[in-house]
Image 1 (cartoon, rainbow, N blue to C red):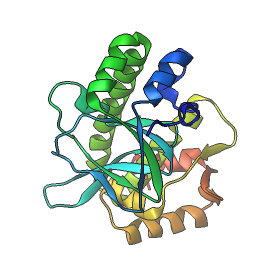
Image 2: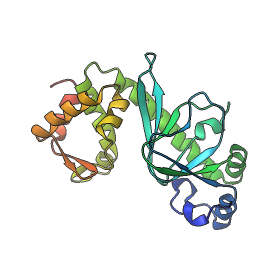
Image 3: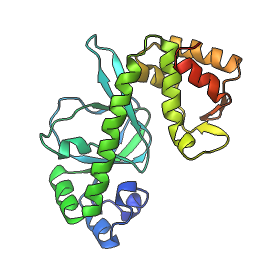
Image 4: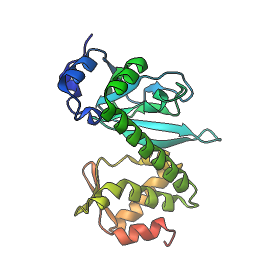
Length: 230
């Protein structure tokens, strides 16, 4: 069944593409729904389909040698995932999980490669975003090497705060703040540990919950904690 072009309106990867090209792409997509904690694909599985998130939030995860789950990155509505398998061997480099009910558009790998060949701007965006994810993965590896969980929490919060810092926003806010469980997966710690650290951060007025967001009240103190100074 053809997917309405309207669903592609907010997909960042397609911004700037000709309307007729997007309409032709919509005819090749299929809409899929996933339940909370449902796995879309496993690391090591074969497949080169490209996905676009319509609703919900997903997380890419990997596992340590002792089988602990480690979060790599989140994917929100309007974003895409699965692009790594389009290049080289069609094998997934991560496991993708729906954090809640989610809807995604699936584009078969052959059609995705053909579309990129016809749309150089899209291919460039894919390469740019893939490079950014590789850089983020390198940062995450360095973060996981920090010795103390509180340090890792502080460093992870600073990474999540990076867009607000780059835009010089005031107040400093982390939008769509991950849950304690999601954050624990990202830094290879227990949820209870993350909760204890957040209790300390809030008691000392370093951060403050603001609905689904997190406001950073004392950036200097947060940086000091990430550096192991507290």
